[in-house]
Length: 429
Image 1 (cartoon, rainbow, N blue to C red):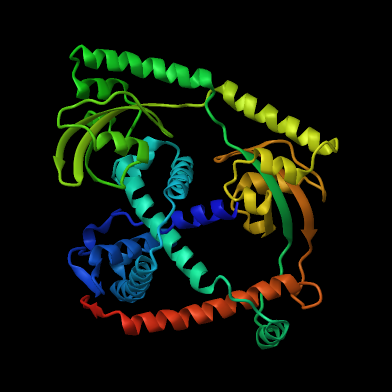
Image 2 (image 1 turned 45 degrees about the vertical axis):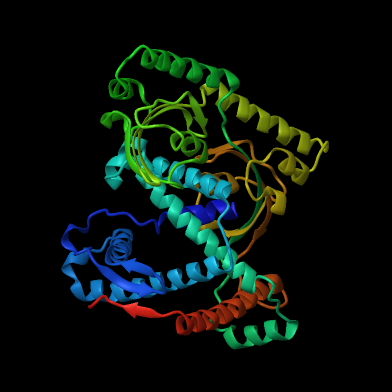
């Protein structure tokens, strides 16, 4: 869940050209080492912030300038950290990036209602949306690893915790009504029967191509990629690292005009045609038949979780054992299904709040459907509203003190990077 929350939060920071017609976007805003920050990068962050806050930025040039300066500094810091990450040979795990992209894309689609609406909203095809997501997520992961490498091993003494509490006790937040919860997540995955059905469909399309049928016409007729379907499956020019691994491995091996065999990725079955190659950039189009879970797949997943829940209630296995064995949460190996403590009124997933309100301490819910799949949720503990104290909230205060110490050291370190790496600001406000 911590991973899922990070994904949800990062949705708010994805950079897209949404409606920047009234704000100039060309030019270099800053040069950091050997990397550049584009004016469009700054503008996009300002626009995204304005959209979130529902501010008409075009009518407030003073606020635009203020936000531009703030976000420019944020982007400079990001470039500094990415330069250091490269020096430390830190790379983002491709599988984790792809998983996060999938979760983020699923969340966005769920929010707007469909892939078609997402494409319309961002004025960009799905591959371009995913490209921006992949870049942003990979950068975030590199920076997280960098912080962990340099500051993850820092500890804090009891004396430091007590000093932190004495210094900030009057400004520490009041603890709202909270819950400590665990879950087991099962994604709804297509059955073999569903996969066979999709495979049979794309085999029929491949047979038509082999007989000389027009690729673009078949894409417009049959492809299930809403971002490229109306353009005959055209994805435009893409660079390495833009598309999923299985797709790229095949696409970059094709010769201009050549059509691939059937390729399976996490999104379904593809047929790919290479149109043009320019160095490490290729112009491709594809036909996609998605792997869609059926109502039977939904039912099977639900019933499996019902059975898991009953085994736990019957004492045949612990919640943690079943989480390790069955949960699809990527953090399960570390937390064994324990999500942590959350303020009741701040739970990000409405289905969680609805079911938790009905549970007693120690109870396990029936399966609950969210955009991520089906969950069974255990309410470990309810925490009443109260003022933080060392006697009752030591762990929470200790964590706050540790984060304060780490952030302070991180800020000092970032200041040193600013002195060591040349920064030239070009943007005039």
